[in-house]
Structure formats: C-alpha cells, structure tokens
Amino acid sequence: MFIVRNTIQSDLEDLFDLSKQALLLNLPQDKQVIKRKIEESISSFKSPNQDISKNHFIFCLEDTSTNKVLGVSMIHGKHGTENKPHFYLTVGNEKRSSETLNKNYQHETLKFGFEPNGYTEIGGLVLDRNYRGHPDKLGKLLSLSRFLFIAENKKLFTKQIHSELMPPLTSEGSSLLWEAIGRKFFQMEYWEADQLSQTNKEFILNLFPQETIYTKLLPEAAKASIGKVGPDTLPVKKMLEKIGFKYTNEVDPFDGGPHYRANIDDISVINDSKHIDIVIKEESIKANSISCLTGSSCLEFTATYSQFDKSNNQCFINSSFNNKIILNKEKSRTFLL
Image (cartoon, rainbow, N blue to C red):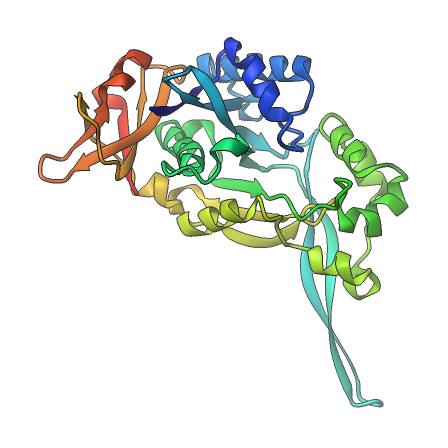
C-alpha cells in the first residue's frame, strides 16, 4: 500500500537517494542541506510560523510494505517577500508599424519584474524513476494530496497558489535561455546562479537587464524554449491545468520555464473536496478517490487512495493504513478522482 505523509527524520537517506534522480534546488544532492530541510519541515508541521514565508512542508510517498520513501513533494508557505522577491519575465507583444513602408509587425517581448508580496508555491516533486508509470498513478497521489492539506489549513497559505515548471534543459543541464541572456550578464553557470539565488537575490535585481528584450534577437532555439516544459514535466503541466491552474504569461528569468497560478478556491481538489467518514476495510479496495486524515495539529497528516461509497457517503481505506495514523473523522477530507 502507498501513502503520502509528512516527512520525518528517518527519511534522510531515502530523500538523498531521490535527489540523485533530479536537478532540483529544493532537493539538492547535499545530505546536510536535506537534513536541514527535513528539520524545517518538521517544525512547520508541528508549529507553523505566523510568518507563513518561513513554513516549508515536505510530503513523502511511502511504500508501507517496505517502509521506503519513493517520492517527495513540497509546499512553501509564501514565495516572494520584501527581502527575497519573486522574480519573473512577463511574456508580451509589442506592435510596430510604418506608414511609409506600409508594414505592420508584432514582436514578442520579455520584461523583467518582481513581486515582494508573493504566493504559496508548490514544487519539489520527484518520483523514483522505477515507479513512474505505475498502475496506481503514484505521481497523482503524491501531487494532489498536497492540495487536501492546503484545504484543511487555508490560513497557512495565500489566496493564490503558484507553481514554476522546469523547461527543457540541455544535455549539460543548462538552459537555452540562460545561455542566450543570463550568462552574458552574470558570467556564471546556470545552476551556480540558480543556487545562489536561494539565499541571495540582490545580484538578480542589480545585474539582470531591466529594459524590454525582443525575443527576435535571441537564437531560435532559445526563443522556442520560452514558456515550454521538459518531457518529465509535461504530466505535471497537464495535471495543473486540469485542476484549475493557468499559465500567467510569466517565465523564470534564468531558464524561461513557465509560471502557473490559480486562486485557492478555484482549484478543484480544494473546492470539491469534502469531509467524509472513513471506514477501515480488511479486503482490497477499488480506488476512486483520495482521502487525507489529519489530527488536531498539522503534524498528523496522511493521505492514500480510497474507495468512495456514494450510497452510504463513506470512504473505505485498506486496513494496512490504520497503523500509520490515529483516525480523526472530523478531520477526514476526500476528493473524488
């Protein structure tokens, strides 16, 4: 059986193994950094900070038969503050015309911007490559369960939920847009700049070109990559669009990856989920919903696939789930798939 739960200290080795399968700043190949992130997450679940930008929640997908973590996903309470703004490039169009030549043109443009009062951000999703394409659709469980957590704890999150998707990268792990723009102004490698931006954003504000950038002046491959996602990210993009997220016409200034956003109450998993009684079932279930169970504090969060019985307005979960949590029917939320 597979469950999603809040991270615990013993997840360190499994999360470090997962970090080797992805190039994510949220899950770097650095055991000490991952250890610190686990500790931050445990603190956020146990006693959320009133400054929601300091809350970082890590969710782990566990195979209960082996107690091994197979995937991870995350929520940052607020990305974009006065001290660490959210940076972006607005993708727009500029019309130009000449009566003398009787010609009209429309040019695609990029314009640098920043937001000091940002958004709750979802990200950091990694599923063990050996379980991708699994018949139980583990990526969906890992991703959607986060929204049940948000639905149960709305006061910890902003009115809009934000997601930044990974663009196609080169075989060397760089970005075509970075090579066309970023490298020329920062004189450093893509991942070096991206990593530095996690702790220091001053250099972005002071070095990135502030005037309009015409994409026609960029190499064709770089231009074509703007707002696109890599093959591993395409399922995430489709899932976000299905549940209510929309492309904002903004992209990452470093790599051109698209930014998606949705109002918290327009996300189907949040808006359509409801509190339903949970019943333990000994025999196997035929899943058609996801149920999350929470205790009196955020610390006790667990989610799994469940079976919704419309006639009794109940959800069944497998009995092997029972030893992972203390059931609290008043805090049982379900979303029908």
